[in-house]
Image 1 (cartoon, rainbow over the protein chains, first blue to last red):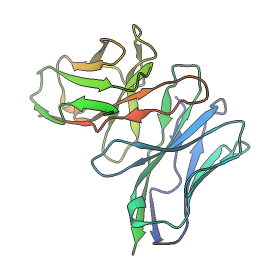
Image 2 (image 1 turned 180 degrees about the horizontal axis):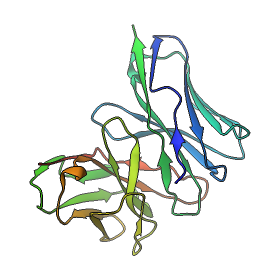
Image 3 (image 1 turned 120 degrees about the horizontal axis):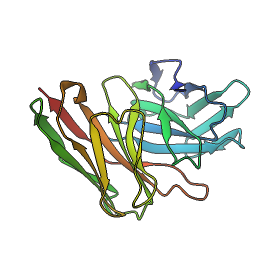
Image 4 (image 1 turned 180 degrees about the vertical axis):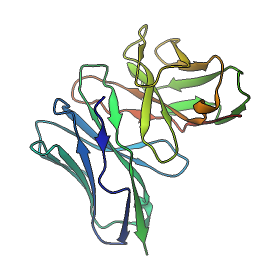
Length: 113
Length: 114
């Protein structure tokens, strides 16, 4: 089946810098995308979502960008903090089909002091 | 409001043993899901229940069965455990309506099959 993938398995950033985590998706019919944060030993935690009729959505210190032309999704974290260290997953869905999410393999974000 | 709860947190089984993983949500969500997560990988969908009374196979259903007991509870059963089923299992729930489709996850069950 089609899958969601990530470009970088590990990303190291300095505290206070901005982080950009990338994701490529292959199902052009997907109309809903989510970013999750997973800390060690815990379940994934919802960060932000975006529908395919939008190019950009902002939350608190996070921004998700969607480029449907190249089927690319990114998560930007402003002023990265030590508490942001985690694995980040993107996921895609075709809504109306039981809301099944297809997850990428994840990017490990390491924040250096 | 506990969100999504899972029991047990840890379990060790011998090959061929059976067990049931329990999941409950108190958010009045319609849809519930079971995923497995293997080291260094994303989550793969085992089974899901779009609404009370319905269940459907996901990406990796072989070796598992599920029961949507009521709107709150969704259990996952391993009838004859195999080492390949060693994984972390996550339950999730979602309202799956209107403009909101995000899923909320439980803390996971870490299962080892020897």
